[in-house]
Structures are given as C-alpha cells and as structure tokens.
Image 1 (cartoon, one colour):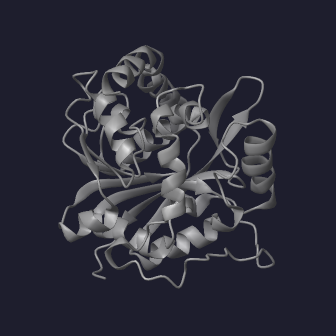
Image 2 (image 1 turned 30 degrees about the vertical axis):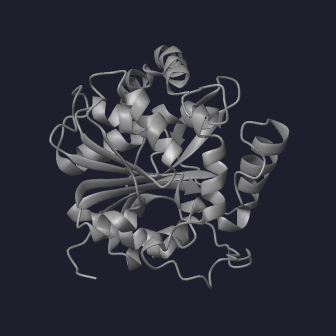
Length: 311
C-alpha cells in the first residue's frame, strides 16, 4: 500500500513542485496591490444574517476543544488525493500561489525580510495548522522556514511525510498528527502561525483562535484564511463549487460555519491578535487563476500580530 502510494506521489510531484516558483512571480503583483486593514473599504453590515448554527456547541472538548469529528471524517476519506492537482483539492492547488504571495508579502514586511530573496523566511519558525497533505508547508520550507505541519487526521500526516521526503528541501519538515491545543500544552511557540481554510471546519472558532494566539510569540504573526458567510459565498463556494462544477465533494462546507470578516476580527481581538491587513481572493474563470483583490465577499485572508498582553 505504502509503496503504491509513494509511486503515485512521485508521479504527482513533478506537476506540483513549481507552485513556489509561480508564487514568487505573483509576489511582485501583490506588493503593489495590498493595503493595511485599516485602509480597507468599510465591511458590509450583516446584522440580518443568521448566526452560525453549531450543533456541537454544548459539548465539552477539554484539550481538544476545536475538533469537529464529522469534519475530520470528511477529510480522512479523501486524504490520499491531496497531491492530485485535478482531484478534490484542485481549488486549493489553484489558489496556493496566491495564498503564498500574500503570506510572503506580509511576513517579509513584518519581519523586515527581503521579499525578492529566494529564502526570505530563513531562521523563522512557522507552524502550518491543519496542514493536510502539506501543499502549503512544502513551499514555506523551500523559502527557508523551519516548518512544523500539524493535522488531526493521521492519513494526512502520512501523505504529507511521504511527499516531503521526495525533495531534500522539504524532507526536514516536522509533521505531527496532533492539534493546536496539544501544541499549547507542550508549550511550543512559533514566529508565525498559519491556518488556511481551517477555521470553518472547527467546532469552536473562539477557542481555536486562542490556541493559535498561545502558539504565537509576542509580536509574532498569525495568518488565517476562510470563507465569508455571505449569500454570494453560499452561491459560489457551495452551490456552484460543490453541486454544479463539482470542484469539491458535496458537503465539504456548511454555510452556517462560515465567519464574516467582522466576526473573525472580533474573535482574533479577543485572542490578543490585532488584524493589520485583509484581502480577498478573486477567481478568473477565463484564465482559471486566482488573484489578490479587495473583494472579501467570498474568500478572504487576514494577517494579524500578537499583542504583548497576557491572556
């Protein structure tokens, strides 16, 4: 089983290892288009929008407070397809260069690094929370970071480790089948904590963000991306992506679990993380590519820094 899977990963490796190079070229475009969160257009008021319904809100998870067992089962079922750029994770593969451009730009600016350097993250400790098969962890490692990738699905970690071993630049990534809460218990800390397309799948976003904050060193960086709880997001990210275009398996997302930008900012503030920049991701149906934009009505990403206040 492992041998067959390893051969499959080798075949996929050649088709996916150019994402980091594409992200470097995308950085040039992003550097001139991003702007501080404080200068962004006013966010839409959504007081009439129904609040997320969380059927597990009364359950006590103690140290594993953010885990959602149903969501874990969904991703475990498709874990072997992480590095298939035409499989269920095709949208993430397509979006990855754009996500990396935002990460590269914001972290370089925050830590005073050269964004045009091939290894701008050298010396930085970064944790990729909810790393899946490692499609973000690997380019971060190639940019010089000391990367820890964590995921609660054991199959994901196995896939990530097998694929990382195919490249000497990524073979040193520390993959762990664990949770952010467990890392907090172990008193781990990182210069940057990244959780992309994860928070909409956890049971308790507030507790999850507190764990991310606890993992971030004072004045360190936290980056989160997710999907807005808007009618446009329902139409595009669920109806179109899952049921019409079949980009994602049906049931991948629950609209009630999405967060609005306002809600995410408030949750992060309560966790001692101040949001400094926010941007949207726009998809061009003609080119099939994603780009950074001001439209945060569907996919958006936030960069924040941890204050020195003790929780």
